[in-house]
Length: 401
Ligand SMILES: Cc1cc2nc3c(=O)[nH]c(=O)nc-3n(C[C@H](O)[C@H](O)[C@H](O)COP(=O)(O)O)c2cc1C
Image 1: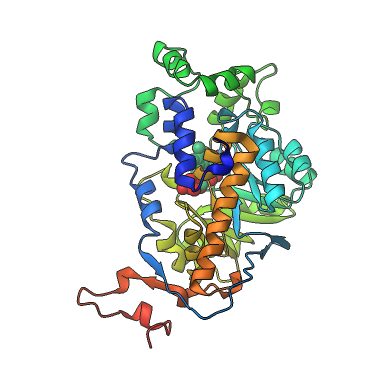
Image 2 (image 1 turned 120 degrees about the horizontal axis):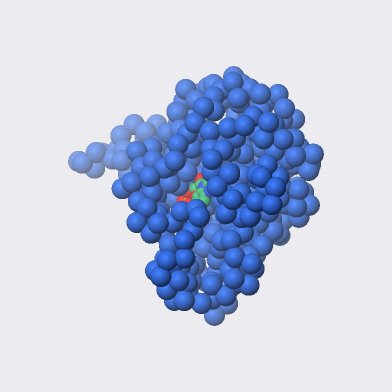
C-alpha cells in the first residue's frame, strides 16, 4: 500500500522498522543507557491537555509562521539526522526536496551523506546547516565558510555531544565502523531484502560527503566516517563559539541547550536562536525533557528565537509546545520513518500528517492562527492537586475564573 494510506506517525514507524535490518532500526530508535531520555521526551506531552474554546469560526486555520526573515507554512522543520543515506539512497536530496515542497526548513546534518553545496542547490531557501565543531579548527573554519559560500542563511551548532554516548543496543548489535560482515549481519540483510537491494544497488555504505575533502586522499566511505568520528571534539568551548559567530555572517542557532545559564551565555555571545533539545535521548538518559526546562530558557533569553525538539509525534504536540512558548519545533525520527518507507514522498507524507493534525487540533481549541497559541490554552495536569483543586499555574492564566 502506498505511503498516502499511512494515517499517523506511529504507523509510519511500524512500516519503517519492518523494512530495516535490526541493527539499523535499533540505531534509529535507540537512546543512551536505560533510554529514559526517550521515555521522558515522549511522556512530556502527556502532562498537558488543551482547553477548547468553542463557538469560534474555525473555517480558516493559518499555520504559517515567520522565523529568521522567512515565512514557513508550518512551525515545524526537519531536525538534523546523521547518515540518512543508510535509510534511503540519495536521502539528503530527498529531505531537501520535501522541505521545499512543504515549505519547511531542513537542517542538513553535519554527518550528512551529501555535500552542503548540493543541498544548498536543491533547497537554497530552506536548507540550514548543522555543524559538529571539529578537533582541527581549520576544518571547522572551512566547513563554516563552505556553508556561507553556498548561500545558506542559518547555521546550527550542536553542543550536546561532548563525548561518545553509551548506546547499549548498538553495543550489543556491534553497530560500529568498520562494519564487519558477520553471519548475523548477513542474515539480518537477507531478512530485509527491500532495504538490502536498495542499499547494495546504491553502492553500499554512503560517504559523509562534507568530511571527504579533509580525510586522506582516496579514503573510502568507511575511512571518511572513521575520520569524522575521530574529529569529535571534547574541548569545544564558548571561545570556539565566539570564533564561529565572528566567521558566520548569517543566523546562528545553538542546538541542545537545556539550561537558563547556557541560554543567557548564548544570548551574550550574539546567538540568534536556540533549539531546546535532549538530542532525542541519544546522548544521555539523565537530561531533562525539553518542555520541562523551556520556561527557564525562555526567561533567560527572552530575545532569542527559542525552538524545541524531541518526542513530537502528533500535531497536538506541536500545538502544545507552541502554547508553552516555543516559536518553532523540529522533528527527528518521524521524518526518518517517512524517508525509509518511501524517500521524498514518505517525508512529505510525514510532514503532511503532522500539519493536518495540527490544523484539527487548532480547530478543536478555537485558535485560528499560530499567534493565538498561548499558555491560556494549556491545562497542566501536574498542577491539579489530589483533592481536585487547581493550582496557581492553571488558575493564573485566567482559564478557570
Ligand atoms: C538517527 C538519528 C541521527 C541523528 N543525528 C543527528 C545529527 O547528526 N546532528 C544533530 O544535531 N542531531 C542529530 N540527531 C538528533 C535530532 O536532530 C533530534 O534532536 C532528535 O531526533 C529529536 O527527537 P525525535 O527523534 O524524538 O524527534 C539524530 C537523531 C537520530 C534519531
